[in-house]
Image (cartoon, rainbow, N blue to C red; front, side):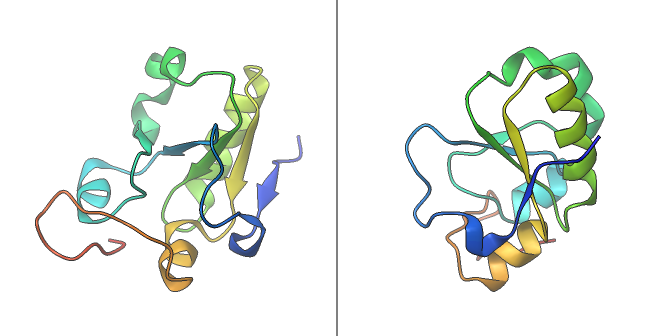
Length: 110
């Protein structure tokens, strides 16, 4: 199965209304820096929490794109409208896209 993928330059800035961002990184990575308003479901919890992922268009992110590609393929097989962010949060950060953190420190990709 081909994984639907988009590069950072193909992601509108700001993100359009109705686009859900799903972050599948671990809690420590999320806390260090994430996209404001994103849904956080670590990859290890995705199967049991799949009902939290709606059928709206969803951009799936992780650190570099590997975990999110796996999550995207699985979610697509479950009938979700998903696309993987190639280059993940590292490319998001490098492009200067906005992030927030849960640590009180400046957001960073960890």
